[in-house]
Length: 491
Ligand code: AMP
Image 1 (cartoon, rainbow, N blue to C red):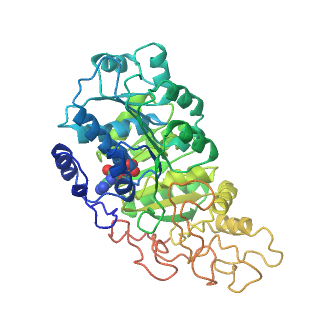
Image 2: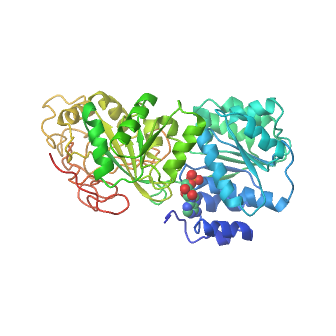
Image 3: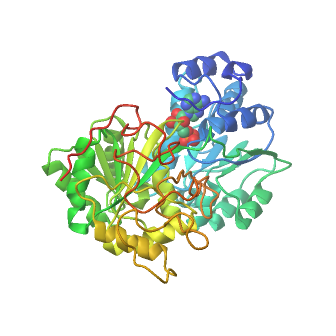
């Protein structure tokens, strides 16, 4: 059951037509999320909107539902190559997922949509445009191609949505987006969504929007994803075994595993398959069709594991991913945040487990520093590598002059000199969201003060020391679905 809520509002409070209401009920959408309850009434009035909202907040329905209502009411037949609504998204995956949401909610509305992105042949997309569609969901590059070749004109667009504008910026799409905006009619409704609002994104919003309603979903306990982050120190050559242990003994039934390279993803998926764990790989070397197939199989529960590179860290909205596993740590904190945000969607809980081997200690240190995170360490398993853990403690405390890192739990002493670097403090509460950089992601620093930290003190169960537990509370050893997780055999 989805548990994201806001106050007492229900979808029945909005002025939706019966067809949309019944689609909402069928989808078990009863309570609007915060971004939905803030954005939908103004969007239905035709106002422009500037929304700061992350993936996972319910933002897609926040713009799709009012758009469908307005287009449905206009009751106009689509014309060849001239959509009335345009949604721009940074990645193919996100565009595909937005289109899925449109299909689900527009089933009885006699509205049509097409999705347009690169990496696949243009033929099907051109055909759909020729037939005429009401809504186009597109990535900027392919859209510009098809505009240049005159398969599509934007002159009848009355609603434009720009989704994940900050991601557009990261991917270098802002000039393309500006070229597209120039082709839009003056009279239009514009809806702008971005997780964060760096200056170039604000400048783009100014260009697109007229007197917008500002929607901002502050991160609170209720809407901050409930991600139980954990580190496992393992040697490189034991990573595969450690992964198998998690997938078979920790009660994970839908896991997204990240590698740094395409080659690594392919090999790891093969290895898992050989060991009786159903999996597929997802990365940039695969054709769009193969990527879609892998995602669909994962979505439908036909495979337990999807092994992906960072290409998949955004835009994947697969429900019930109970584990995100960083088989290899990313080099940037931003990727870390995006990756772990694939679990704990729609108000559910999830585990984000990161392996760290000897060569990755510096990446771990950087990630924790940049995100002001103190990720609890899970050491009570048979692959725990003490030497790596000690190296991590040393790296986190570069200025410590006297005394080596010592035994587990032996350093980071309470009441020690000056401020503790609590990177491995067991009582820490580490929660991560989607926003990037700094500590804006809602990640909280170490909780508690002064209990002996030290790696290895995060409890005995694989999921101890998570969300609310501090060092002692919580329900140790439970998986995110509330089942007791199998306890690994000790070596
Ligand atoms: P989004 O942020 O649009 O990617 O949505 C994240 C997830 O939340 C998707 O799986 C949606 O199906 C789900 N969702 C969005 N709004 C609601 C709602 N009001 N009630 C239940 N689930 C929702």
